[in-house]
Image (cartoon, rainbow, N blue to C red; front, side, top):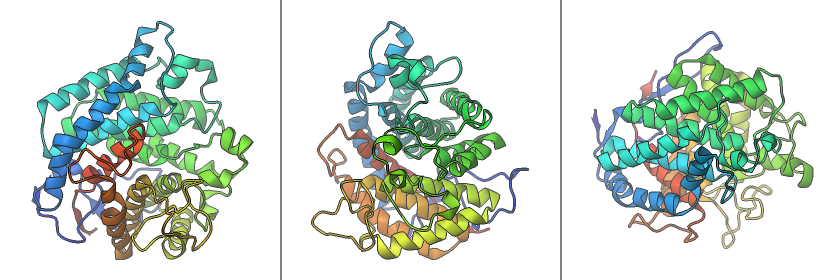
Length: 410
């Protein structure tokens, strides 16, 4: 299928939905075709995607390999007692790079790039534990410490693993990373939901990823697990630095249950991932509680906490929201990641409701808040601090994912 993208015909790539016994009454109004079935040929997006393929991805690969990120996976496989290098969420950057590569390979096939990705995947698979757990920080620093601090991004990393695996499978048909992701998702399900063990994700991401895994495998346990993660919030289960030291559960949207939330709080990126996941689950289950909350919080964001450009998260102190109408110009934080997350959420809300206002905000956030993070040359970024690799690679994802077709309401 060849598509010339027109104004207001933009959305994220998504796989088709399969309803099962877990579903109530699906409310999805719009269906999106998978990115793997779309070729981008327009004059605006195609040059940008080509630049990502030929320049930006090479920058990402270089940064991923020159830093300890790949090296940590190699250390785990060697089992030589070596120490972890870097910060605890570094694994996610490798998974995000793979996801970006997967989207790029669809419109810009590259045998050498695919070979490089397969090499990374071999190293990732070799680092997975027999029970499915995969996290170089805890594996190298002591597995006895895993699942003790909810802020340490273990499920965040898992979510990006799942997203990268689903994207690479959709592009190449190769299952190795997908099987790794499935094994880790099963570990999550067995460790928490099936074991009746309370857990809050300090940095949301796994919820929306599990819905993608459900749509890819048609295994309802992943949809149930995504819904379970959402239902855990707001009940006082939090443990770790956010809850014990900062005393600020609102920072990660954990002050009240998701279905009772009416205003935007805390870290902007975490909020966008949370509400994207809630909209994803609601589109399949028809859960009115999530839908009502999403609409109410959306009104609070758009009408009282968003810049005219579509930027969100004005406060640098918490990388997020402060109070209504606090939108300073000179000191606006407005993280690129938050704008990309705003695109994700609004795409899901449009899918859920069919209402055009969500696509209007999607476009505003995309063209003003997301694209400005990447230079026209493709190798320079709004921040020159290259250790902020999550922002760099997530921007690549934002460009590559968003070039897909919105088709008419079902």
